Length: 289
Image (cartoon, rainbow, N blue to C red; front, side, top):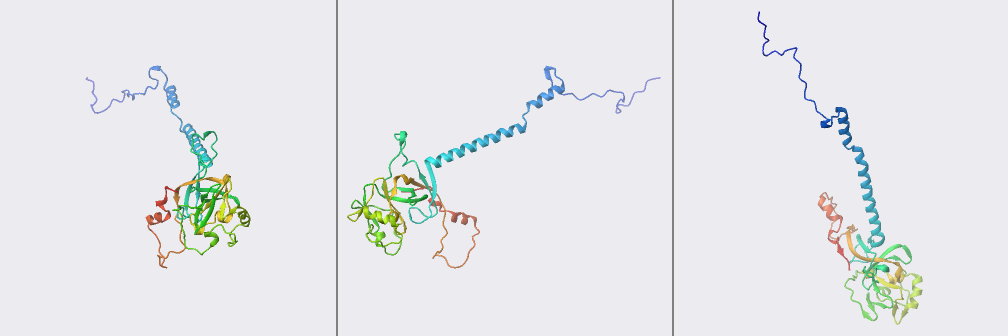
């Protein structure tokens, strides 16, 4: 009797299943799978271990930025915002002025390398207000130590010679002989500091104010609306912080009245209009003289 042959489409139930090929982790080293797996896991960096160095790097970078900023603000440059119209139209209310603190610094051993110098006539300077040293004021140097100063029709004369002042602005104002024909022997302005008035009587000779050594006579460019050396006196050399040289930003100040506009209210919804009106973009980066 011949043996029965199973149909070709039916699997042999007694046949041994062929297992899938195993991944040999150990390779030629002959390591077991567990040992090789642990070796591979150990070779992979832990994400938590990478976070700490990143935080430390960021903290270090931030610290370096802070140190550099403090150094710059302390020794090199300092920003100030113009609060009044006394220097118009050179500086407007809302201008942010960058001040070079190194120009007038004591030269020391680096004098041969860095451009240190004394304040010069025409410099725009920022200084500690003599009566309130905590306050900063910005004006223009007009009289140097040893100069004889007087004003004629609001314009400065130095040592008998009219000074070329293309920066001066004369906005409409009431007539004031003390302001425009400085110095005066008569006490005509209540805004004059009494102590300065007494000192000025000693420093005026032949109708001119003599600037003492180590001091400077300063005026605002907006000659009719500036409280300056005419009203409170000289600026001591040690009070000078630095020379203003750059407008790095300028905020547009809202005007209380605008004669070009009627009384109707308008709401600005255009983003570009709001950005345009936010600042005086054409003044940013302007060098001041």
